[in-house]
Image (cartoon, helix red, strand yellow):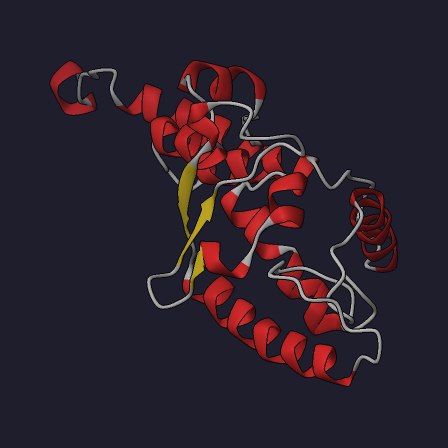
Length: 190
């Protein structure tokens, strides 16, 4: 979430693909990330004591690209922290160069800058959760899996609030529906 492209890219994919909330990503700590298993555990949802809901306590499976990026980020982060004169001891995954935990508003502002520089339409950092749900739906992921990944207790809430039907899905649904209607062959009718 800084100037370096690798840092920005490594900070964003777990949110994009796995639907972690911005606060989850900001509070994520290295002991909660198992890069060998390719998982991260969301255990700190609220700034106060404990999570918002029991459904929020979850393990998210990461794809190979996110694991690769997080491994590279961990190496880079360690090097930066060693060079920092005002080093802060922190287990946080996403930090400033000295190890200090990112402020929530910094992550959102930084994301806005990256989106503008990339020439993308305006989108809030939190909207990445909606994108993750919609992309999962488009990829054919079961709604129950999407809901659990996002930490929702009811998949109907996820379906109603977090997903959108992409035009490609609407077209595929229309074609699939028509394909199920029995038709008489032209030879039989002629």
